[in-house]
Length: 312
Ligand code: 8YV
Image 1 (cartoon, rainbow, N blue to C red):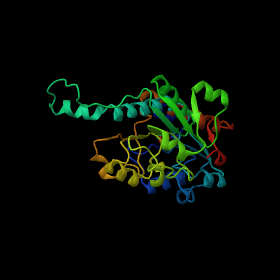
Image 2: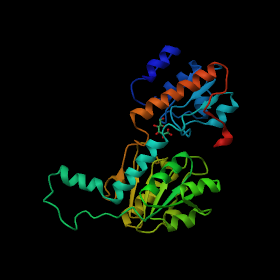
Image 3: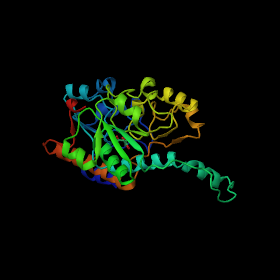
Image 4: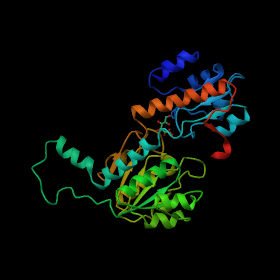
């Protein structure tokens, strides 16, 4: 739908199928195009941007996170960057709740029993999980998605805490019913479930490093639907193996689709292949945002979702 609409409006060259563009293809694209529409798997770094032709004026990212693009270098070269915020908020927050429930209620283990034909009937003590109602959820990153997670968690009866670069306005805190922690260390040590909802930037890289992970309660669970780079994946894997952390629900990984193989062997871990925003509705709306950003820019106006380095 989106590709067809784009092709009606502009002279479009599509990369092959759903596969990732190679660096060479990406460089070829920035040399020739006026507008580039990358996805998370297209790394538009300073090296790629150095090859950009005079004509490249806009990078309209198909995604909210722009950590695949060197926004500051693009800016210096007079190239504008836009993203697609807002339209994937609810889907990603839904997936966060799905992961919280999948881990705490042991859904994949139940599924495996059924798929193997191993179910011998109901038993009072089989596959007991933990109740989410009454538990403390800590949200790291209280932007749009963090706030959408907070609303959902409150509806599940959870007590919601958060840490963010900036504190929310008191009326928003009150509306969400959330408690702010200035110290991430202190919040991490107190929560039963920790949800990562901050973007990946140089200041959030490995925010959940070995030292901070060790502050978590041994009964706690961590879920990540944001970016894998925020957690030190090897340290997390070690702690999940040793029982220092009770469980994890991960939709994103530190090295893209190269996952620490040990994570796959753990029963207390639910892994998903970056599906947080993967709804038909969400993808179409993301595409529509890309089109509006390109169209507005092409008409000589400031595109609605312009990303400037100061925002990051
Ligand atoms: C997108 C995402 O599917 O928008 C984001 O930041 O992480 C994803 O859910 C992806 O970025 C598409 O490029």
